[in-house]
Image (cartoon, rainbow, N blue to C red; front, side, top):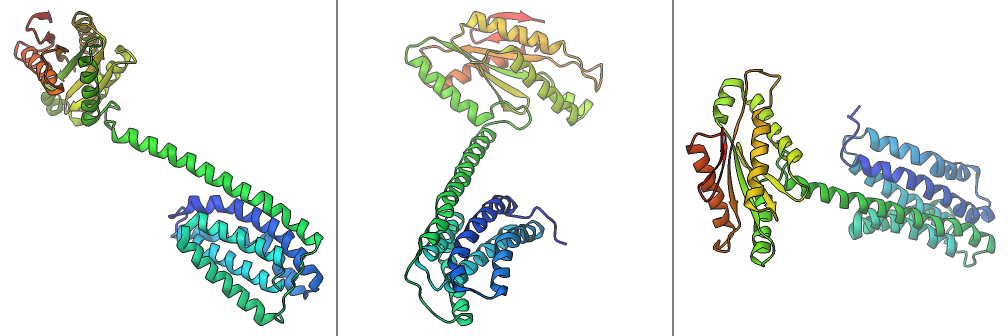
Length: 352
């Protein structure tokens, strides 16, 4: 048996309920159109099978198929064929016939667009042709009041059900789009902004600061001797250290601060509306907390941070020059012994 859960299975699940509802309501419509014609017993049996057995068979076929999408499209074409068959069997009674064909067409165009709608019309025409071969060709030009009322449930309820399914699908697609956008802007290991997304926010923050509003500071953070950590304790432990730093950043920053992974063992933070003195205190507290962390993988492991800070200055020509100042401050922190915070002015903030 082919593996279940193939391509298109979500579509089969959605169509299972709508097919069961549509064929049940359509059964009422077709019965009203067929009853005055006094059809043979096998026709009544086929009506019951088509309305109440086929939806379950169609779903099971799709669920067990290697390609559920392809199987479900075939099921939909069979639905169209049956719809055409009942139109011919009812001798083209106007309202039941138009109701049956329009509901099938609406379903097909909603699922597969114009091309699939055309395929559905071909299947309906084949169904009509088969019915005309079996039954004597005739045309009933009058729809009785009973037949009219029998068509009202499907005319009212099935479009509502299909509209609800389309609405739910639109909501699901919008959510998936938001999730994909978030994933495209998030670093998979740390859960923080990735390099590109953080640089986009830095450009926005630079423009805000240049517009004359309150200033800001940016920080570049480097894990000291991270290569030695990887070589000594392994890359799995190295990844744990990176995640620990991202966790410390989330716990010690404000909701308005923007932290990202700049690349490798380097992280970056935008601190809006924060003067350099306060930014220094925040980064030094973060550095101190991170260096005090222990690791279950090896109690001897200790990691420290070097941090470079740069406040926004009107002399910055662009966001890149602002970032360069933070990079220079980070270089000074690392070259001066590491495990410390240093600002772009070159003054020591704290050394450990």
